[in-house]
Image (cartoon, rainbow, N blue to C red; front, top):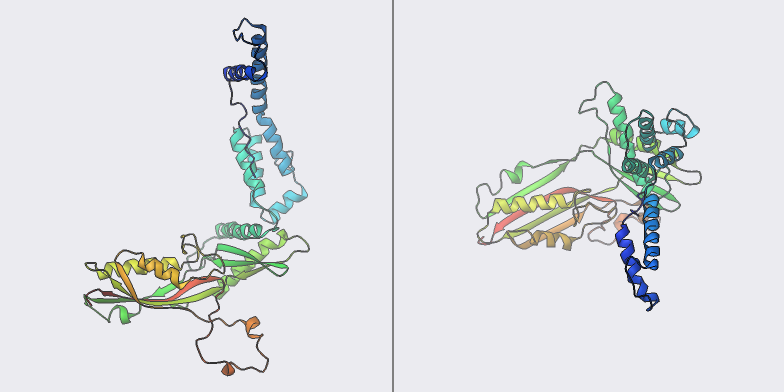
Length: 376
């Protein structure tokens, strides 16, 4: 929606007169005198003058009208008034209401606020949801939990890097049956390491073959994740209307393993090409900054091997892909396994590679790239 009104005062008196004169031949061919001395022209000039005045008045809604609209939106005659809604806004951390209430307080103190500024402030409030009615509302409100956490950090006497709580990095709302589920991705850092082998031992000093391996380290702080989910639930609960159900869960992460060998073009440096490919693939799998468009992954949208190959081959210095091994770590899905007979055993399943169930967002677990020169 838009609160901005169109500019109605766009035509001058001269433009209005010219348009009226051009319309005369459309209605009669007997009117041939367009000079100011003609009584009909005088009448058209008077109509143009009236029209210009009406356009100016219609376009000049006084700023007091916007101020009254601000009071109407808040339900407050003065910023110091208290209503059931204003009390709930304080108790439930309705930041948008409190911010607009401060705008009204500025007006009462005599602060100069332009018509455009008032319209912008009211629009920001109207466009922000207070109730979790749609999936987009749920995502927006889940992200607003960061404001509550920021208040708690500010109120604390001292917060060190080790005690700082997690924030909501991104929220993904999905419909599951009759309920809405908010999957929360925290800003917890994923730790990686370059093992000495092969990074520092294999192909050391080789000019024809180089290899780089990156492995994830297990360092999940389950208590911090649990505290974050509790904060989101607490913020969403008063914003869910009766009869609706909104659940809050941690975002599902599917660990990705990728190992490939590339052949570099002639007269290219192996280390430069290897570093470029490595950085591009690492960024490609980032949940919020990766993907084909660099805007992050849609929840449940799995990476595709052909897209990864296309990305690698599009990078400068890469001539070919000699080997490519891309897989997910299989995730146990009870609802899927329950479709098997209750007496079935995993050993009864036919041999072969287990199915790869992708859920949620990608998380790079292992990236192993070997680069060879075309002469090798």
